[in-house]
Length: 175
Ligand code: NI
Image (cartoon, rainbow, N blue to C red; front, side, top):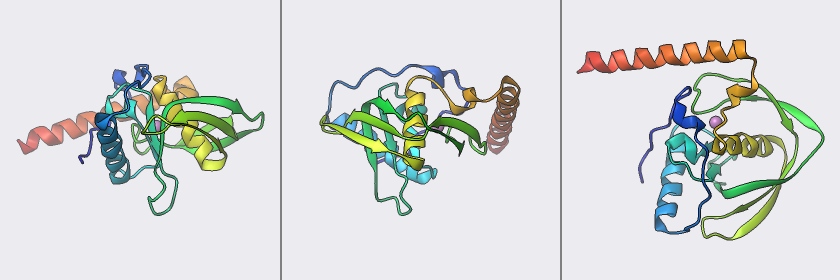
């Protein structure tokens, strides 16, 4: 297994639209294992393939306390969403250190395939419902900061670009 590089906002590759997974083979299982290791290492509760620059419809989530409930969603589709909406303070491994309120349907029913290609349906609420919707947005090339006002988004973009410059200059000094 290996830890994958997570793209950071505003990397334009985060806005690519993922294509459906058609082949359920060893390569896919290896990718899932690597994504899980990357997510647990970060640490985070969800990761979409788009964030590791693989533009396929695959996401993983683990909202448990002890990292023992890895959920894999391949080619996910929201088949029902509640009218009731909830606001949640969201964060993202591609936008480290930034949290803000996003309003979404409180409950969703999702249809997806597992690592073997088997279809399943899941009715989610709470944090799991938030994560599913957040990660599915990634597959559509959407990062959660795009729900915020243009002013806030620009401030986040500036902060992220500055951090990236700082990281790069530290790396250059080390050479
Ligand atoms: Ni995210």
